[in-house]
Length: 396
Image (cartoon, rainbow, N blue to C red):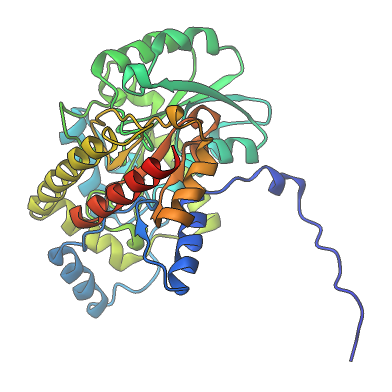
């Protein structure tokens, strides 16, 4: 038997620039504690706790029985692309065409493919911070410069468009927007989007507008920069089925973009995933065309949970929390506790049995905050609040 030492793994240097999504790491720690008999309230993971609506499940099962188990076009099935184009046209007030749609396995590929297709090494990409960590991870991985624009609590975590002109230069290739926003629940207003468009002006800068939470709005209405005059050809719209229809495990999202870019993004699909699973695409057609009552009911329930969570957090020593207008997260300020965000998140998991995320999981401007997901039952949210309150009373 050979006793030779294993050969050195020679990773490409770019792998050192690849980040992660901390929610999954915290979930693993929480599961390990549960395996030891601990009772953990899960407020770390960003997915609806509802089941996928039965009409969507039935459509997928029917598709399987009818043989939708083979390869399909890399850009997506024609009927689904047509359905998405119609849906986007109606909801964004634009004219979207099927050839502008690319269907992908989840929302993240649109982030990855957009940056891969548009951004060279040394180019700059402006992105929200605190924000979804995969933005920064992909920018860094591909050798571009990640330029964070801070989302400020005093503005309800909306983008301060007055800061943009000083950040844009000749190297700026892409601006990323996210509304409703992860992790803060902030929602961009029409005037914010108009300000972004003015800041771009006539420059040849594209916008990746991540609107995956667009159907989860609690106050006001959703606005898309894609709807503004002259912006459609400059925008890549990211949306999908995971959050709206509780289909996170189905892995299906889409991008809507100018046809010449869609052709290149479809080539990236061909080279990476071949295509999105055919039977899930049939289910996606039913999701968009079928009854929408489940979406409305889920949104109403998230709003109820949000209200309970924010009210409860504002009663806890050292915590203060604004009322988010969308998504299913709350982002309390914990600066008065005197604890760093990561240390407090770790301690609440270990000592109080409440799994949350450090604000720094979403960028360095997240220091001083935690993210709690309200995608859990009211009973569990109230249990978590009691535990955090008891910990704060004892330790602060």
